[in-house]
Length: 445
Image (cartoon, rainbow, N blue to C red; front, top):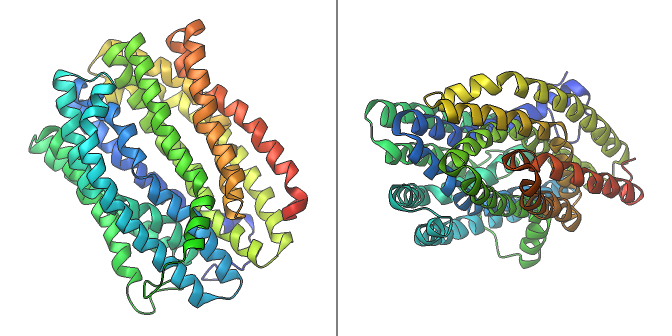
């Protein structure tokens, strides 16, 4: 067993799991930001403030999409360039993408602060609910650039063969957020503002620390330095990462539609219940997303090196691991439905029952979604952005919007809880067709 795992290695199950594990944990800790905020806000500030966070969250997450796009799309190009033995060029591409992310983050933070009020009004917020949405949204805009950088570096830590260091950064950021939530919300009783400030501090650690690390000499395979503007590489990055951009933007649009439907069927209680379900969904999906982020540079490297046997190896092992994880997640979700609802909304009996019932239906999603997440990421790693984007576009926007609009007409609120599972089922048909149709081109089967 090697002490250091390299992208060029042959990956057995133990080596693959060891390599992707830091990325999985990184994604889990990233999702913990909003989960911990929601937990403290719900229990210490109240149901109305909790609903405000959930109502504003889809809009806020849409602005972080640039970071995911630059990270996944850019790391595929940089890893492929490293596989072609062009280290200096890879560093120039890496540096340019980081600088573009910083500029974009500053711009979008200003846009977020301005638009949060009209968007909250459009979503039906008024009175105290509107006031809380504006407060949380404007404070969150302060650390948007850092959060984008955090998302970018999650991918590039893996490409630089430093996944454990990336894990340490994310754990530090996550622990900071949790401790400060306890202090600001639980002890000092600063309310919703305290939760937002705790998140700002955590995100700054997650985004700025890697920036300092990659600026050092001989820090890793990748280093920030002088570069120039590569328009074609930026366009290719955007194309490669368009699936992740589409996933985040679509999720924001779809979650807003869910909130609108829930306001119609169950009012504030429905939005609060959906928020609890989404927090757990963030963590469960983070396992698949983290695996995809961790394995993508391996796929990109061997694609660049034209090592077809290792591409076959990665695809076969990945599908088996995802199948096992999916079954475990569904069983676990059914078991934790009641205690989960108790932790978040146990103070309200009606909201508790609604949350428990909704999560048990929603959890069927976990049986399928991992394959679709990996399928989209797999094509991004192969530098086939359009196909990756097609899977994400259908999965996160077209199918979900259609189903969440139609099913409640026949099944009421249960149709809302089951909409994601039906959308994932439709998407997996597309994913399988894409994998079959492209097997000769990329030689992975």
